[in-house]
Amino acid sequence: MALFKIYKRGQGYYTRLWSGLVTFAIAASGCYVLWRKLAVITNLWVKTLVPVGLCVVFGLVIFWLMNKPATADFMISAEGEIKKVSWSSRREIAVSTLIVIFVVFLMAIMLFAADMAFKSLFMYVIGI
Image (cartoon, rainbow, N blue to C red; front, top):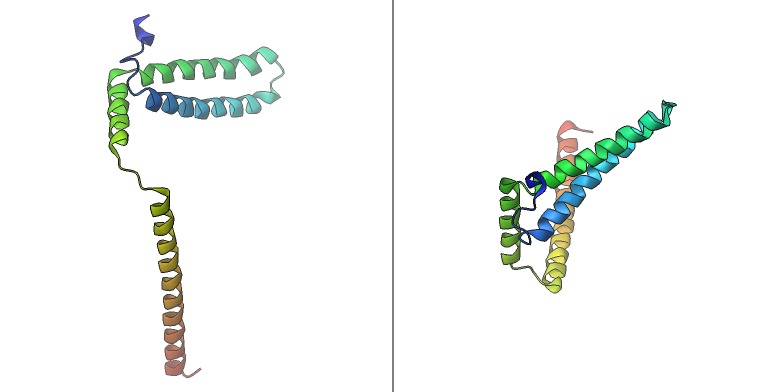
């Protein structure tokens, strides 16, 4: 069936795979919530088949969307751009993180000192 044909097979594989799986996981969790809400219905067929049917429909729609030419081309190009990124080493990230933590701590101390100075100034002006 041409509707569910894989567009540009092998290109953007991981991006499409993980995007589809995460989207399906969100849809499946919504179907699970629906199943829990339908627990008050005594008819087992309705209570079970409605969420399962919706989950199957969501899965087919997600598969179709992941292979729609516009979506697939976007994901293929996004994966290509991610491969071009120059990622920092673990050491560079650790050093940068420590610098950020130190600067935030230093700024907190300076803001605390400024706050105490203004508090003292205003208390002196008011006369408390």
